[in-house]
Length: 586
Image (cartoon, rainbow, N blue to C red; front, side, top):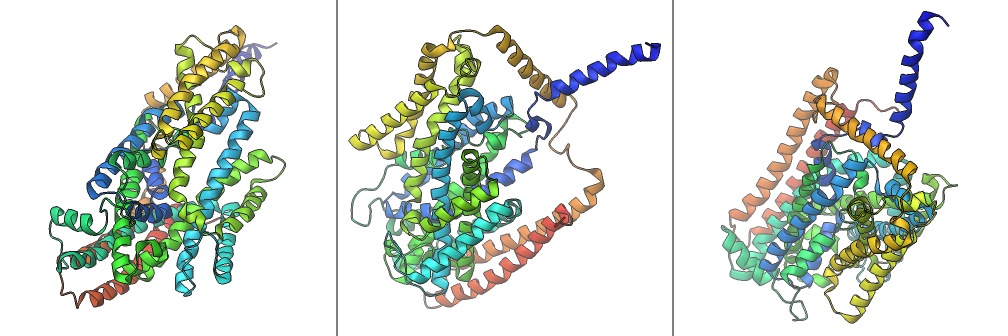
């Protein structure tokens, strides 16, 4: 062997060893994202069609004004805290999605059971959102209102199936572009909620006291208490309490934060505290959005002269925003349905590995399309979100217990995998016992429906370590544990080096694209200015307190302005996205 060979061989061996070691670092660790990504993501995902349905449902449930405002504040703060304290830390530490990490903990058979639950939940939610979109087309075509659990119009069924076909095709073949479109839509949809509420308030104020203006927060509270959130249901029964409102707001996203589904998102987070950006979705979508939707619903009931229980989301949106409102309902339902169907398709593809994701999504889409023809699925959105929390949250508790509690209790993490189990029976039994507890509580009425997921979650958190202790977790596997510790240390070292190199939130920005980025920012500022002007016009109508006889004309004038401003916004926003993304490869 020559001297050159002798000196080069160790280096080559070290390089090979380094490449082998890098294979143990999850891909997400190499592709961390800055805070802007998560701010935009949560704004796009949580300002959506469900806000139309849930916001109006709060009115019919008879919640009081102060109970709603305080309950939503508490519940959404708890939701943000769950993302910050539960979801993001474990996602950043492992750099894995829940689906990947769960298979490592519980084995492939448990994962199939869990994916079936995911398929069921997101499939039902996708069907509900398609129905919401169909409501707007139904309104535009003057078809009958669909308030029965089953369809009462063949034309409505046909409209629903056409919309569903579009959703299925997009989810199966082009979800990324639709996700980008949803990001553009979310600021406009939030603007529509705010403007619709501002347009509805003069009508409600006139209905209460004769004046069409509201000039103070106290005046708003007075009008809201008398006409919107009165504290009693339409049947005259007491409404839900502050704590029930808070529990629902917390439960609404519990399957993704306490249930850890959003590990898939936050595994790319630059830092553990990035969970705070969930507050953008919670307080813009689940606070402002729900409140504004309630205002729109109450105002629409007065404008149309019907009970809110006899109006669907299209009636509400058209009465308060005209054709822009119909567009908002269609857009919100469409974007939400696509995201839900995409997740359902991913879960289904895990159950049918021999078929491509696109084919599985199409199969699931056919079933969802049929379900969407039945209006009851849209009417069940509010309880459906709580059922999702009850069904999926215990799995998050099991994962948290495995990751954090087992090592602290002197038990072995990944013990089931070291035993070679295809199914972690301790995890399956803990999940089953938690669900049995929830069903018993529901049947006996021992606890309000909205609170059930909390003790259920804690129960799974306690039961799983106990069962694991008796089923093998107290044993040790020195060789396996050493290899696993080495893999985890590689990730820790990789993270430390990345942070030590001074990577910041803009580390992935290409300097050669700075000029393009500036153009995109100018366009986006212009688009934002259009939305601000749209809001200013709506509130100008509110504070000007016009004569009641002039109010309908002024509202119609605003509807025309809103169409023009909406067109201007989408042109600017879509050009900005085109500039940012560059020419398509298609």
